Amino acid sequence: MNTSEVHVAVDAAFRGEWGRVVAALIAQTGDWDLAEECAQEAFAQALRTWQRDGVPNRPGAWLTTVARNRALDRLRRDDRGVGKLEQLAALAATEERAPSGTQPAETGGVPDDRLRLMFTCCHPALPLEARTALTLRTLAGLTTAEIARAFLVSEPTMAKRLVRAKQKIQNAHIPYRVPPPELLPERTTGVLAVLYLLFNEGYSASAGADLIRGGLCEEAIRLATVLCELTANTSVTSEALGLLALVHLQHARRAARVDEAGDLVRLAEQDRNLWDHAEIIDALALLRRTADSGPLGPYQVQAAIATQHAIAPEAAATDWPEIVRLYGLLAQMLPSPVIELNRAVAIAMAEGPAAGLVLVEALETSGALGDYHLLAATRADLLARLGRNDAAAAAYHRALELVGTDVERRFLSRRLAEVAALAATESSRATSGAADRTALAADSDISGPQAEPGTPTS
Amino acid sequence: MQYLLLMCFDETAEQRPGDDCRVPGPGFDALATWVSETEARGVRLLVGARLELGADARTVRDRGGVPLVTDGPFAETKEQVAGFQVIECADLDEAVAVAARHPSARTGTVEVRKVFNDEVGWSASQA
Image (cartoon, rainbow over all chains, first blue to last red; front, side):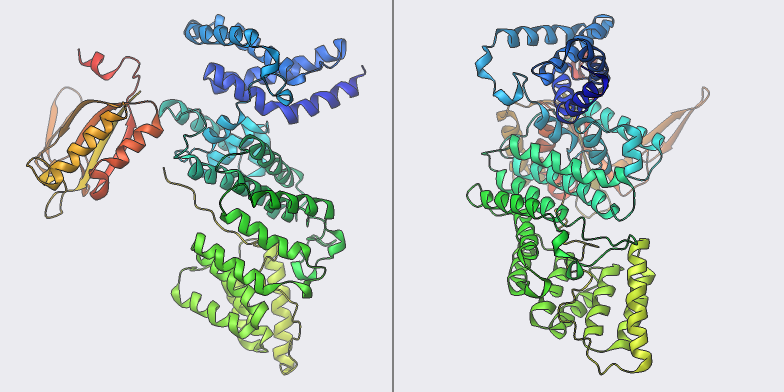
């Protein structure tokens, strides 16, 4: 076997097996650092051995065995390791005794501990930023340097964050297990929130050329797929599928949402031929499976909203009344001013800008969204559509004071220039007429309809 | 695993929550219910006690051989430790679940801290 073929095989094994190998070793030794180091050594060993002997039939089982032997070697050399060593030996013995037919074929006889690992990485006792980092390190196998770049912090800062998280798991004795049924729905919501956050980190960054940040989308999709497989036929299946469908529907638009200059293109103006229609079809199939697999939850509703956009042949054909209904449902499940804002935008599309403006101004009066730039931007857009260009320009100025990212700043500046020009020439009588113009907050791909699924507190 | 539950209250409040737990009545019953529920789920209650006011505490420091004794609690905050309970249970999730059902959680706050090196154990280190 030549070198490049071996590299391809090891890369594929790394993507598919890293999390499984690490999860199994943590289960067996309780030592997170040991697990990561031995997994790393097993993959290094694979590069050498597979070149000589060829790729084994079950790469995952091969890697797990090599990693476990490494762990055994290390523990033997360490006095404190004796207790763990006995557990490892006992475990190896039971696995050898187990008849080969009892394990699901796809796991290659290796018990799959990744679900336990996911729940532990996303435990509510850990800070949110540590949950995402730990998930990427232990389940997806990203290096500390890669994770640091993805979250725009220095490598030492990220290293410290990971060390602290692992210490907390150890010191507070955070359990390494799939939660019992009474905690399962709440904890699954926590895992889904982490995966959606990972996806959004990548998605909001993909306007730039940073491939590692963009790669977070693929990692989030991969992990969500694993979560769906591992939680099949449980009380949380439908929401896991809902999240997977949602991220696929958003991911399917990736080629259309940025123009040649790297600027974001609003949903209504995207070239729908550039959407990944195969991915959309897959997502719709996932969503259909949720119907008979459990209760309706916020991720399924968000996926249903994304579906309405995905199936509209052109922006003008979007079923806005249905989207209004779905946002109403979502607002009942997760009362949040951000969802109210999105609902207001949908109402503006379904019933006209004046109807939307009433709700947006009510939100403004309530103060619930504080200095949220998309509130001002939405108000500006609705005012412009009503031909009130002076007021719209003032609202765009306000939004520009509050906006955080350059991409959005450029977008808002362009819009401000447009309405300012209209106001100046006092051609405001000419109604903007763009009935199909979606407001910034309405699934614009700048904000995305974020449901902010709350992170549970215990 | 052993965890320390620290019950904390605002001492400046008129009546300290739980003041009624020593005499028969709703507070007493609530605590008794918690004890029996906690033991029923297999969690052991080790040492625990209700404390007098932090305002009545004395705080001692020794820096270089001469003890410095001051009046009042270690930290001058409104919320003070009013009681503690050491429990033995499976893991952090169980400790939090037990703490969440303690009557003090409804009126004050309960901090959940794992006992350091609890393989040695609370009772063993007491001996």
